[in-house]
Image 1 (spheres, one colour):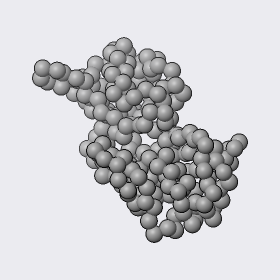
Image 2 (tube, rainbow, N blue to C red):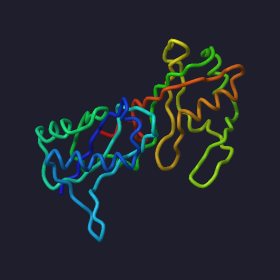
Image 3 (cartoon, rainbow, N blue to C red):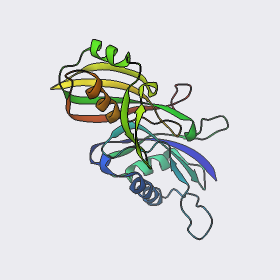
Image 4 (cartoon, rainbow, N blue to C red):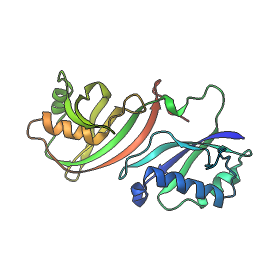
Amino acid sequence: MIKYRFCYAKYGDAKYVSHLDLIRLFSRVFKRAGVPLTYSEGFNPHPKLAIGLPLSVGVTSECEYMDAETERQLTKEDFEALNRNMPIGLHFNGMGERVIGMKKLADIRYATYRVTASCTKLSDADLETFLGQETLMIEKKTKRKTEETDILPDITGLSIEGESDDGVILSMVLSAGASANLKPDLVLSAMEKYIEGFSVSDYDIHRVSILGSDGRRML
């Protein structure tokens, strides 16, 4: 078996495909492309595929990562065949064999986002005041409960990238991964709570990159 890491983009209507459906979809894509995956043993064998940081439904991305094990070395032709069999809205951007020393998907620590928000006026000074708070307490849901959480330590970067037709384009660098994971919509909720007069009527979230603890990409 040979271990590979794939980078893929998810856009358009594909943003509504759930994490579990995506795993099943990739299994079919590999089969149709003639790329043999290895399978687990036991009563219910499943292909050895792992997605690094599940993307929320409704969010687009240009930088998702998936690890897969194949029964043989892959070629450029295999990579092209995989993309030919991908549905509209999904596309492999890159592929590399996993070698000794390569970061594991469990090493993901940050994600960067571009958030286009339809909102009231927002200035750099507003963001400076927002990030200057001692704490940013907001209700955060987990699998088991909802509790007040200080999200300030999980915001590494927040700035205005530009203007949209009826609002702003924000750049966010947030904690991501198993140890801490902050979603952009929660940051927007905190901004509505702490920035006087600020409100959001609609927004679009796009993930730009996924980074390890060293701030570098995973492939």
